[in-house]
Length: 364
Image (tube, rainbow, N blue to C red; front, side):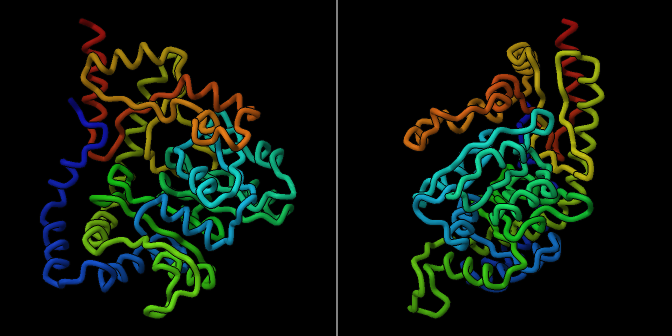
């Protein structure tokens, strides 16, 4: 069975570098904070173009810290996409605010600016824009809306770190942005991890304090915060992988092109659309097909794993039942949930071999 994300082959490729990096941390005796974290944050800042990069315990933690830093309060409304992972809406709800679920554009799967504007009320404070499957949201359109209604935008770059929009890197497209270093991400560590990016010094200071129990001075806590820190071993792993990220992204894009050429011969399959000005990390390679069950069986027969990202709209999740979610109408999301199918695309996946297997099984 070919793995969906081939982390073992990646580790073998960088084994010597990883062993040197992790041994450096073991020898230092510094496992929380310290030089490894400082070096990674500097490298992430340089790579993304953001003035400040603040590492934390997870991508979800990065979202929570950002919302706290933006002073989200009980009863506030925050607009989130209905077609994505649960974390953005979950973090809003955990803070007592109300997630408002926006529909997506059918071609890119990204939050639809027109749907966002239709949801704005006097209680709306901001928008969490998720760069789904590796490409960035239409920030030009979204910023016009945000400026008109005095709203902030969080760029959720959990799947797009390494992508760009009109030459500007993901993580540096809004006042504040977040990412995840979950192991299967294009830039992933060997556990949970995340980061917040901003050019706003006041926001950066607030995020750093909130991630450290609301403290900027030992045993002095100016505000209620949390414990959300990346450990030094994960930082060491990420520093190694960051050096190889651009090469891996190039291979992911090549893999996507190979898939695109293959599926161009099938009328019932829509391949990913990359918007003008965007590059994609292809965190996922996701098809849209009327015959999903057919393709699932076809890949399974060839021992190729597939995934469904995502099987149901967020507003239908039981955890949002008390947020008026039963009144939500997101037809594009509802349609896509029944048609999307993701295929292996990582830099250590041989897509040509996958397609050979598919073709050979078809001829049996």
